Length: 309
Ligand SMILES: [Zn+2]
Ligand SMILES: [Zn+2]
Image (cartoon, rainbow, N blue to C red; front, side):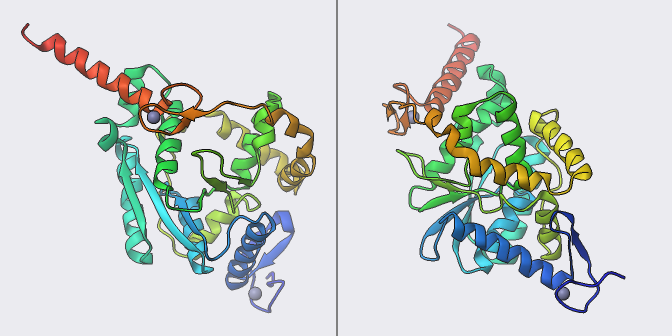
């Protein structure tokens, strides 16, 4: 039987990328220490600042807020009920269960309260893909909810980050590459964004959530099936199987050479406040308010259709 590298107890967890076999206790400590090192290295957060953690109800986001509070950071959660059938109902249930157990503050807001309908229906009404509508709405609501916070943290892990990186590299989206970084400083109405889990794999966050007894939703969003990011993750997993350590090397190598793309990210975009809500945007009315207008317009139209006049 394999022994923990740090003590004499039997090893329960093996992290192949670091060739490290650890017992449960030492895995927890090692995982937390590595995340804290990332937080310090990239100057993400200090213990006086207030951070809003985007909570989906999945393992990464719940593990992140659990870890931040455990290490003494001032983290509050923020969950958006997207109104996507059973998936959203179950996510909300896990979030409530977690909130009760951990005694942590989690703010909950709902897309239905804003638009009178969930993501699926909005997407049909405005004839835009659900993931693009969802992205616009989430970004807006997160930034609005974070008004009184210093930063927004998300649970993106190494696998998420390199799937995005692969997509950006395959299409040579140099502007996106310039902006892909574990920390994004605040800009106009956008809050500082941090990703403390970028150097830990999905396997590690799942293991951490499991050994720390965190209740989370297993299902992915039903709209994410067939997403490119899932395909990229499968490919990267196969590469990692053949060549251990590739995932970490891909990300750290990119961060080392990222300066090559910075010029592409400097394109000055003129932002002005949305005339409806004040959110900084490139046009007169921001995308969120435009979605709202279109939904309201559609509602009026269909109401007129059925009115007797
Ligand atoms: Zn040990
Ligand atoms: Zn607006």
